[in-house]
Image (cartoon, rainbow, N blue to C red; front, side, top):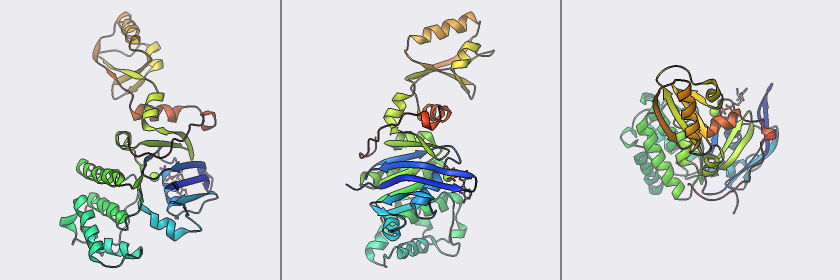
Length: 318
Ligand SMILES: Nc1ncnc2c1ncn2[C@@H]1O[C@H](COP(=O)(O)OP(=O)(O)O)[C@@H](O)[C@H]1O
Ligand SMILES: [Mg+2]
């Protein structure tokens, strides 16, 4: 089976900035794939290159087996891209915007087309605003239209670049419900997000990007397993954490997180706190989450030193 997305030795420089520094990735059909990384890691550049909007310095990209440069039209038709930035023609209504987009992909007016547009509008809670002018919509509503626009030609591969940045909980819920359904129906999903809890619950496989390189690539389950078994989270009633513990831990929102290799290690931590005369206000033993993994990976050794991880390919969500 041809890969949904094949990224091969891709490099791109903007002036002095090496935005993409040799990226290899293969995303199988039906995967729900997460592309994570801090701001400036190169996520949007990679997605823009996939959409044929950025010219690469080196390497090549295929969407559903079509080269995004030499076979642009077929490649572009395979993709539904929800861009990070909101860009619209303010003079059209929501429905017109979707009809125009469909026309752009050569899908003429038909009952089937209008039925699909209605279904998209329903699933994104946009039906009541179908006749509204784009310029009258709130940011969240515009974001929904961006998603709808990407889906109008029923692309096998759906690419979402931070679709939930700054949007309300309700839209996040509606959107993920719909995208999950599309994934179950066989669509490949490529998602970038800053919400690591979203990525953790949605993505079957994740690549982490740092300074234009892939620094981690594995199934979500393996990433969670590989980086620290469990962690002790605690908040002290007073005073700082003894230095010896603080060296091993991380401080966030008033809580310290200390990695635990074994549950028995809790005993030693408690003993150290007792002998330092510290009182514990709150304590829990947590499972590692993707945020822990992300922080660890981003801090970790340089990409060159990172062992190459096997690509497991294929498979759907978790
Ligand atoms: N058109 C551009 N011109 C100059 N620099 C750019 C351009 N697009 C992106 N960059 C730079 O490339 C790097 C990667 O950016 P981007 O792909 O937007 O990262 P991300 O989406 O991961 O936040 C950043 O340093 C950014 O400033
Ligand atoms: Mg971006």
